[in-house]
Image (cartoon, rainbow, N blue to C red; front, side):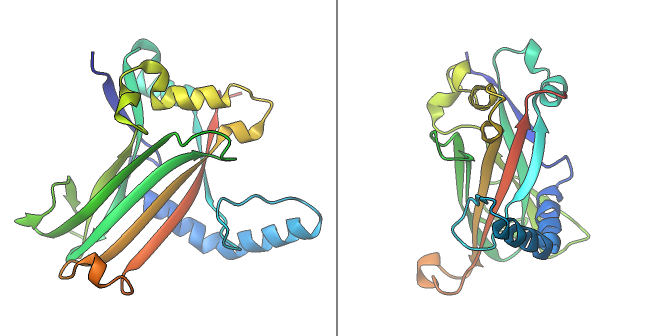
Length: 220
């Protein structure tokens, strides 16, 4: 039996929520960098998911009980959850997206990933095969959904490899804080749709956002 797929809007139901989280981080980044520097001076070991100095990841928290209550997972044994959020795309441009969910300390294999290629929207009659939302107040942009729910297709054939059960397996030892931390990486390359990416490798825009997902086992 195929599982029921349920997607959690990981940053909230608002379609602008992912970029709102990123913007809040960017506005506060100077303060974060200063705090990291001070921690280093007093002997704390600060672990960052990237090698670049000063790249402090955004933090976001999920609670298992709230997810279970909202989506009725306790009543639906064959339900596989996924994480969903929306990204903006400027009209007339193309983008490639690579998203992955990783354990914080890299001690285990990647939990899930997804990749979207050549996403574009020029007009209602000229766009790629994705679900787009057109915001009439933002004429230059559209939004499209990204869902991450598996590492391989086989993950959706058995409940113990559903994404929520992979996560629960890692957070069951509450004595280790790192077991509750995951890294959501969103890599995005954007280029002018009139060109081929391989022809303009030095002229594209690239985002690389790392977001810490803290999964709390309950509301205690």
